[in-house]
Image 1: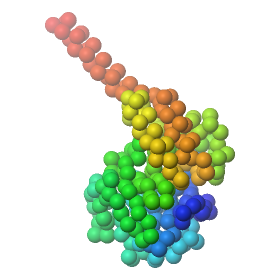
Image 2 (image 1 turned 135 degrees about the vertical axis):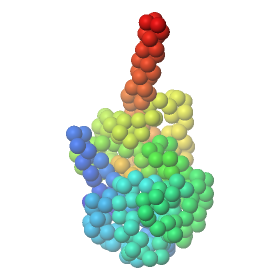
Image 3 (image 1 turned 180 degrees about the horizontal axis):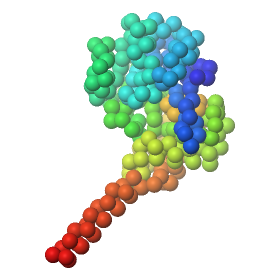
Image 4 (image 1 turned 60 degrees about the horizontal axis):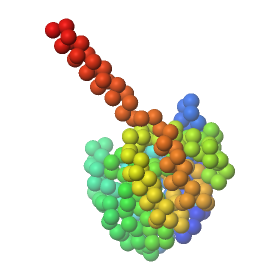
Length: 266
């Protein structure tokens, strides 16, 4: 864990880093809105445990947390969920319908969950949020949001495997960022390589049109010039991703060739 970072409009980042063996380092961020009804966005990695709770506690008393936005149920986003629920007895978990089902299948009590669907609007204390599906995701239940102050959470859409821990995204040059995004895209959501280019541009272009005042990402360092920079970098990285269907297409061709060979022998 690295120290919490104050952002804007009441938002805080709770950053951490994890090694990707042989490739580099990956940021893993949770976020906190310290308003009238504090909301934690994702719960970090369980490997950090006490350090995550300490970082959270340095900004707000965990017992005061009212809401936990669970973007999806991957372990790097749910690692400290159970522990935080114990520390925050009044908190409710906002999660997609499939995410709720996955939590239940894992043996977790889902009585404190509330299902959120894309397009839902919620009033949480002194702010309003609209749930949105981010441009790219690896789990089908994934939900981000945009709030009435213009802060947007895009979950895993923008991520990069970087050579080393880099606290400030503004210090990452364009080439390093694009290379890191190619690595992350190939690991996290390789299917995006086969998206129609026009659809890909539409997905990422929506972020530019929304023009969020604060763009929060799960797997990049915190930066100040992200809303205009990241969609362009992501599009450039997408063009370099290896085709996800390549191996499957090759298998289809091999099977077809085998069938022709069997017919010829017959």
